[in-house]
Length: 351
Image 1 (cartoon, rainbow, N blue to C red):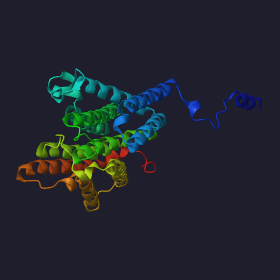
Image 2: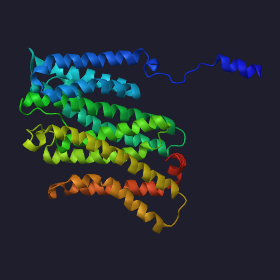
Image 3: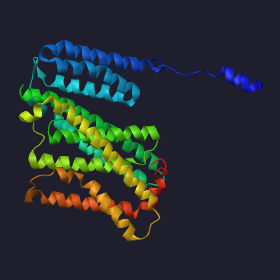
Image 4: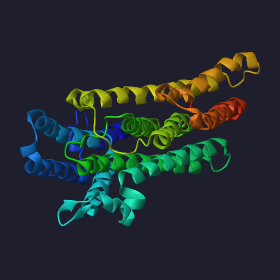
C-alpha cells in the first residue's frame, strides 16, 4: 500500500495537457521560420495578389505549422525542401534576373535541383525504394535493415518530388509571366503529386503502426505511376512547361486537383493494404483456381496508369508490352512466395 502510494505521488500528472505545452524548441523554431517566410512573401508579392490569393497565403502559414506539429518528420521535410528550392531559385539569378538557360550550365541545377532533374531523381529513388522493400521482405537475416533503407529512400524521393514541384513553379514564370502556374495543372504534374502524396501517406502509417512490411506493396503502385510518368515524358515530352488552356486557369482547379489526389493517394494505399490482407488470408491456399482471382486483382492494381493513356501509337507498344510483362512477373512472384510474405506481414487485425 505504501509503495503504491509513493509511486502515485511521484508520478507526473499530464491529464489535459495543452497543445502548446508539448512543444519543444524545434517546434517553435519551425513555426517562426514558416511565419517569417509567409510574411516575407506577403510583403514582397501582395501587390500582385488578389484577395483570394492573399487569403490562401495567410491560411497556409498556420496550416503548415499545424501539419509540422502534428507529424514532426514533416518539419525537417519542409525545411529541407524550402532550402533546396531557394538555392535553386537563387542559382537561376543573374543580376537579379532569372535565366532559364542556367539549368544547363549550373552543376547542381543540371544534375539535381532543376525541376526535370529533381523529378527524374524522384523516379529513380522510388524504384530503388520499392526494390529495397522487397529485398527486406525476401531476406531472412537483414530484412529490417533493407526495409529501413527502403523507407529512407522513399523519404528522399518525396523530398525530390517536392523540390521539383516548387522549382517548376518558379520555372514556369521564367518561361513567361502569362505561362506561370501552380504545378498541379496537367497530367504530368498531377502524377508527380500522386506519387509523393501516396508515399507520404504510407510513411505516416508506417511510423504510426511501427511496421515497414507494407512498403513493398504500397510502393508497387507508386512505381507503376512512375512508370506511366516516364512513358508520358518520353512519348509526349510532357516535362516541357506549356501555357495552360483557359479551363485549367481556374482557381477552383487548384483546389479540386489536390483534393482529388489526396483521395486517389489514400485509395491506392488502402487498395494495396487490402491486397496484402488477401495475400496473408490466402497464404495456405494451394488450389490455383482460388488464387487466380487474387492474381487478376493484382494485375488490375498495376494497370491503373493505363486509364490515363490516350492515343498511344505503335511506337509505344513495346513499352506497354514490357510493362505488362514486368507486372505479370511481379504479381506471379507475390503469389508464388505468398507463405514467406504472409509470415512477414502484420496480423490480419492490424491490416
